Length: 310
Length: 310
Ligand SMILES: [Zn+2]
Ligand SMILES: [Zn+2]
Image 1 (spheres, each protein chain N blue to C red):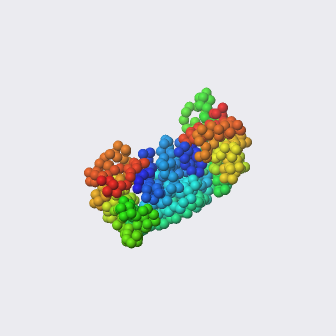
Image 2 (cartoon, rainbow over the protein chains, first blue to last red):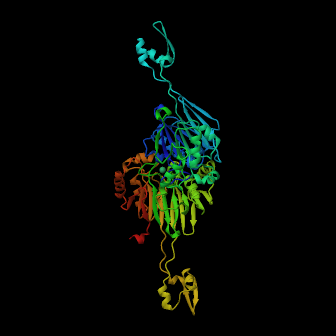
Image 3 (cartoon, rainbow over the protein chains, first blue to last red):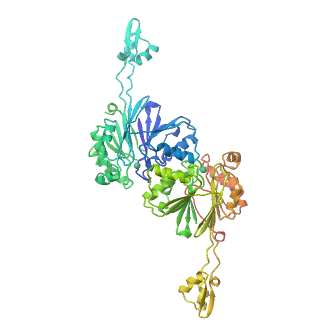
């Protein structure tokens, strides 16, 4: 999987950082794009990337604050205008359906693809062909959710050399063995499992919405290969973070450390911090959890499994 | 008055042209800003100008298509977040109130200033201290309106030299005469009107929403010092313009010519045209009406009275 940060600021757009959106490229899934949040001008940010709006298959909204949803009506409309015909599903808290439908209807926007809008709640689990998405409610005043994407393990490679040693030639039987079936072949019983390499561990990526430090974050982040956590404020502004239902750099790093994640990305940075401050912010996190990074608009990172990474 | 084009594209944002918005700086009115339309990322465009969102006093929406309104919720919210406390009024077609209220409520956005939303109709006239705004309905499939801003004439300058010749010294009497009062002074009757220069003609600026060529446009544009007219298509695409309820360069120029306007600005240019094509588009208009210009994002122009201009 690959992550591309489209907007990494908090509350209002600034020249340096646009409001929230993250694109997740699902490499296992023919490069389908999933978006997490869609602040105003997300479609404008996308113009500066290789992402095609019609390749966006799912949009997950963490919460309904304007800086996370005001780009939705425009993106949904443009996707249709630009020829997108594949279905699209938007997931989000209760109210997301009314928001989208009201905006599209009042602006006489009729999209030419199947648009599904699914309202989620704490504990919702979505199963896809190749992954599960676990959803948990955080602590942000209004309902705010975290998404934990857990790829299913993939069957190992067929060990062709073992089959060749037995004289088994390529053909439909290879497919059967790869599917872990038991096959009779020239008087022998071949068990698919015996001819497969180790299963490939699925990746885990956790993307949390705006939140105070809360227990649910640890559960959603547990053992993730990559965690995206908001860090609206610096460490010393912990009181302010609490008051505004946000987190500090240090709190994000604590979640990463205690949950045993592989890599932490900080985002949703207040516009009070300049790009010079970024270095200080990430260092605050690194003092607690070394493998921390601060996202900038258009930052990209590949999510690697623990094995690939080491 | 000064016009600043914030977005000059049609339908969807492109790298070259953002979706519709125009700022009108009311020089007579302490530099208050009025916006006409507010497509997505208008607040982002404003970040690259000297405009302060809190100085925006009125927003006039021509019609409810997404490329003209999707920037409203974000701008209204940011204006409050950034400390704007002065009242703001939004004018627009029926539905604008539901659009704004639904977006703000569902996103839990509470603005800290008085926000009035006024739904207009064909023939609505708004009177301000220093101007009238006449509103007429155009031809765009959905309700689309044009705004004709007519400044009231301003009293001429007090001709101080005439008073000094009579021996009248500066004092409250100057104010009375300036207000066109009749004043008794040392046995003489002084009539304010006799000591004032010529009235200054108010300016007329007409900004039309998306429309086919229609009669109402001529009425709204009549004798304007400046006309802003959409030109989504080139001259030869007149059939397509008709089909999609839009205008061509030549149609815009015809309205300007027949209405005796002083200056025409073309905007709402389809993204099919590159910046190279701009020259061709404006030349099509100039063949019909010489004083034509094509707007680009961040184009600025001062609106001058016919006298100042010649
Ligand atoms: Zn936020
Ligand atoms: Zn338009």
